[in-house]
Length: 120
Image 1 (cartoon, helix red, strand yellow):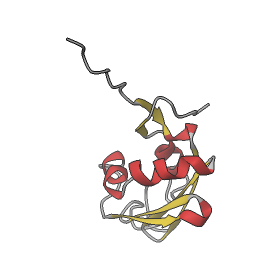
Image 2: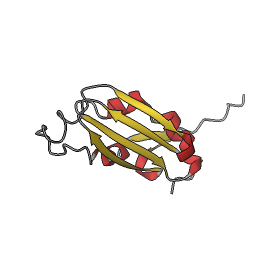
Image 3: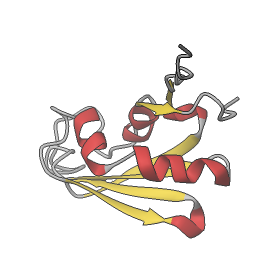
Image 4: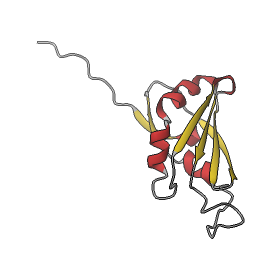
């Protein structure tokens, strides 16, 4: 009896391999722009980098909700992380009161990608 072919498990990669990011602040809300390095990576970002997944990634750091906005014409996603900055730049005792390192932290998040996707 012939067995069906085994499905290859997707590989897990950090977002830094397929995207770059910028972050900043507005009051107590951190803002992260996540931009695909190649247009063919955008659908993967759109599918895998959800508001819920980003909220889990920043659990304990972000006290409010995470909102996601899609910018397909730029191959980018924008996230607002409410309650992330300890009341904002002038009032916060946090080391990064302006949210500049949130982009680097997001790029460390791992997502599953198909093994046949070229992510060099």
